[in-house]
Image (cartoon, rainbow, N blue to C red; front, side, top):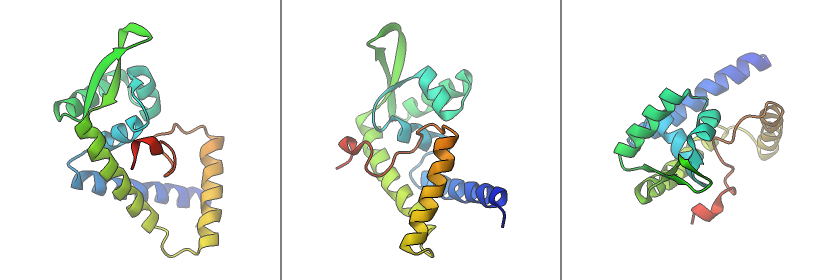
Length: 150
């Protein structure tokens, strides 16, 4: 299998696992992404739009739906009184902790057939692809943001 086919199929595989995990937590995949992005800190709408690759109207709808479910809230931006930031609520923080851990477990299980050296090699190569293409941090490393996890 070539690199293009492997990357595209891997993308679909991870997306399917992510979507299944999200459904089991009563989330859409987009809501799951939003909650994971907000784990380390609140973000402004412009930053969130860039990180999630969403137009302003789509992001507004996503935040509105997620806020109606009590998972996020809008709060004033301390640096710009006209702007708002989006932050996790206590309910959203608790839910994303569980969702994140379970989703990590499921995605990691995709590599169960690989040896430790193969996993390390795969991580190194994919990490280079991600870094070379400046992919936004829409999902943290297990040790990143550990201040939000027990």
